[in-house]
Image (cartoon, rainbow, N blue to C red; front, side, top):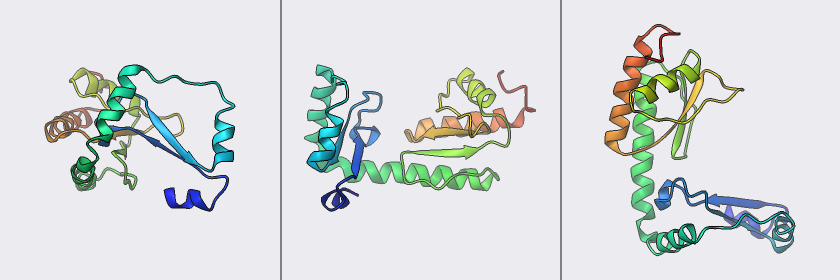
Length: 163
């Protein structure tokens, strides 16, 4: 995608320092675009970056040689989770990201609440996709805990998920 910025004057590629950089939650990113497009961005109100976030970004960039390892770890966890869902008949949208969307076959918010009650915190569902939830790929232990809790939650009748 970054190569396309050279020839597409209107293209803006936004990137985030996410889990792959070890900075999930810092809400820090950057944009790559032609100068005129960047100029348009500069007309918007600024969103300052905190000193700790900037320091974390610089430290993370110094460890770029670990990105391949992080990508492989995340991809393996994601692909394992997608296979796990498929083996249980749960729909999962194709993903190349550090997260997946899984179709629950029932309302997502009660399932999400029931998982949280068991100490497993996942993403949210969206109004346009009320029976789906977003799951970010974590450590092997975190993913094992998710699987164990989700099996229990989905074994409960719909409407009894929050216990």
